[in-house]
Length: 526
Image (cartoon, rainbow, N blue to C red; front, side):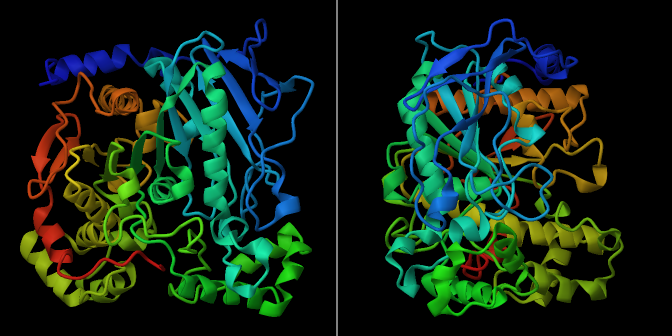
């Protein structure tokens, strides 16, 4: 057993290990700017608190000239390229940072460069439901994680929404045959860059963890079924983000027609998409989705029988990735982040049937769900019942499917967690969606974090940071503050409950799992 430290000792260890994370930010040192060679040209970074930082490294060419087409590597450069600032994010609505079709950039944090060391690589993919986000969020800053884990940390930008996932293949233009999965192909190009270049940054190209939260976890799950990604990463982790099925070509085509209609184009005019401005293309995203009610048009990976030839976890987990160790996790109160209007905290019982019908994607009677939950949890308020049922039926269900399918492969290399530790700053949110990000990155004080910086948050952060970096290194998540993390098997469903007093538990929330297992799971919109 790894829990040789008691919980009080673990908390003390967590506090002592977090000094860097909570120390005041100092001025960036330019006295010794590290220069590293890549296959396309040299890049110059900077040193921040002993960590070598490279922001905005180009891994792909400008996609504007190849809109809706697979990415290409960048043209080589001859002068040393400064890597001091983040590159542009992909085009998207309502983004404060710079956006551009020229968005294929990644960022590297490394404890040492040009030193011949082979450190594990932690390749993080941002969330945002395939529609928004970037690798430059303060929550994803890799300095603390790299420094405390002796790993190389990478974040990445890639094409999103219609720019990355608009399915034009059926419309006949051969150049658009891969348009439905360009965003995924960008990520694969970035992983190829890692394979060819990361050794000079102190990383091991044969020890790469691909991990992500929400949409980022779904992108990881999708790559586990993509032949082009085979061999590019060696561990995988999905934090509150699953992709059981990709969009079918029928639904993807319906979305394409809806999008073209919003732009005033007919299918035969598809070539005109190349000439529209970014602003015009973004305006089309305001159209209503033809599949998902009350949602704007959604774009995500497509079963195009080219880049994606099978669903990631249907009819079983993709065999090509069965040997890859995987962490699958969720937070205890996922949907409290999605329903933050004050009205959701004063619901009446009569409100619930219609709200549950609209909020749970599987086809199950809301009256039945309500009645069963009231039997299971007779003391819950209507609001608390709503959050609990929607978390189980909306967010957690896909994680259960993925874990079970992995367990059926009998590889004994799947590890499941449930984050129960609750926000001390926003107690009404409990442990909501995104809550695990700053804990794993060690960025408790970053903008957007609601973990607080107290002793409990530090201890839980230490557990998660150590477990994920250990997993990157060995394929087994371990931390002095955690008990032995057992693999997920059937029928036991071993799950690490992460809290001040972490423990393994078989089949947590089993009654809720069995309730929703009475109906098939359908990935929303696919």
